Amino acid sequence: MPEVIAKSPVLITESAIKQLLRIKTEQSLDDNHGLRIGVKGGGCSGFTYVLGFDVAKEKDEVFELDGMKVLMEKSHGIYLIGMEIGWHEGLNNRGFTFTNPNASDTCGCGTSFSA
Image (tube, rainbow, N blue to C red; front, side, top):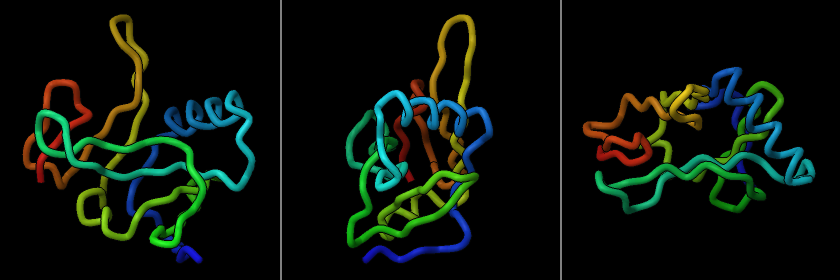
């Protein structure tokens, strides 16, 4: 059973939460699904961010953030603690943004980093 933690190690802006809830509704996902935040090897700087809906797994910590269940593997916390996920809506692009104080280098697209 995943461990439930009271305080989230990441911050999700109000505009990002709004978009995530819209996506969850559009995909007709039930309350068993939470937002998975993580990292995986790859990308031009070494790691890429994982952001998507999933069900909790044994290695996960579970957080509640502004009414959204957030899932994160315990081992990913070292790379993500203090990170802010935002939503940018502009004339030339729109999408989720990642501001990570643990990143020593990031790529131009903003979805890849090294630590």
